[in-house]
Image (cartoon, rainbow, N blue to C red; front, side, top):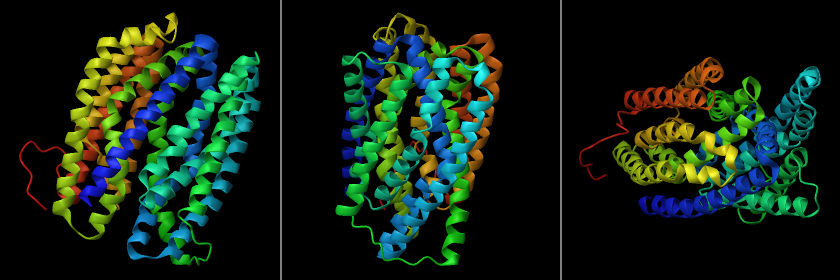
Amino acid sequence: MSANLIQGTAGTAIVKVGGIGLSFLVSLMLARLLGASGYGIYVYAVSWALLLSVPAGLGLDALLIREVARYQTRGDQAASGGVMWWSVRVALMSTGVFGLLAASCIWFFQESIQPSSEVALWTALLILPVWVLLRLQQGAILGFGRVVSALIPQLLLHPALVLALAGVLFLTGRLNAPLTVGMYAVATTLALLHGFWLLRTQLRVSKNYTIHAEQIQMWWRGAWPLFVAATAGMLNDLIAVILLGILANTESAGVFDVARKMAILVSFGLVAVSTPLAPVVANLHAKSNHLRLQRVVVQSARASLLIALPVAIGMIAVGQWGLSLFGPAFQSGFAALIILCFGQLVNAYTGSVAVVLNMTGHERDVAHGVLAAAILNTLLSVLLIPRWGLEGAAVANLIGIIVFNVFLGTRVYQRLGIRVVRLGALKAG
């Protein structure tokens, strides 16, 4: 299992490096071609779609990781297929409801929205159902233990398609913010089709399944706190971009988005470790091997911090120059970038606390922690953005991250007796 975790981490790291590189090229290309204002409109519209995709998905993507991994441990292929097809049907119905609500809001507030932003928002509705299915697909493939295969559609194929389609629009002279949002929807659809091909041809998901009422009740009980946690988590990630677009302007939203994406590089190690860690934690907990679980959790936290420190130092050292690559207007985000880097260091230091709680049946604790952090982040953003702009949004984000990690780290110790941060040597297990 340790070898699988190391192999999964290495594979994830390779995919993440490629994905980060492609995403950087996408942001750089679109920022240069659309300008700070056009890029801000694009980011603002896409952020709304991605934010709505999480509550529309009802937390079922995270549920699929845990349940499919659990059923695979038992060798129950029929149950794996059952939870997957049930999740797809439920998520599609939920997405329809959220799509109608979003369309109603755009129509109601259309008088107060700039014409170009309004068109971009209408176009962004096309992203919503496709992105929900893409997240479900990734969760299912992760549950099968195919970590690298699960990440390829979203992290490699999707940005590569966006990059290619943006190049086509530019060469035809039709590149603008609304069309770029539409291009994002097309790229997401193509990535989704690739993932479906993987599930059907390689993992051979069973179509012969039965779903019992007690299973549905159990899945709903598990999905609800995951839904709250995922929604609040996405709110934490995107609320600054959205509120800057509302309280300041879309250009500020675009600048902050670039700074946020650069700061996320600091937590690269944490993400690389957390993705293969999820099924391992679920497996060890099912076997009640808490000694090995303690060792795996602490070692993963140490590895993520070891990677994060030099990245954070380098990011602060070259951040001003890095922002200038996107255009002169983006250099105003340097102070926010430094603050955001400190927040990602906190994430790396405490490790995969949310993953540990989610995969051991304590998802309600994650929901409480991330919801509290999201509410705090939102309130502080509303208070600080009008006064300090980009820096105010970054400070609100930092405080939310600290509250989240302290709360969840405490809960991991209380529920499982595991210290996510240990300075001494670990016992073999």
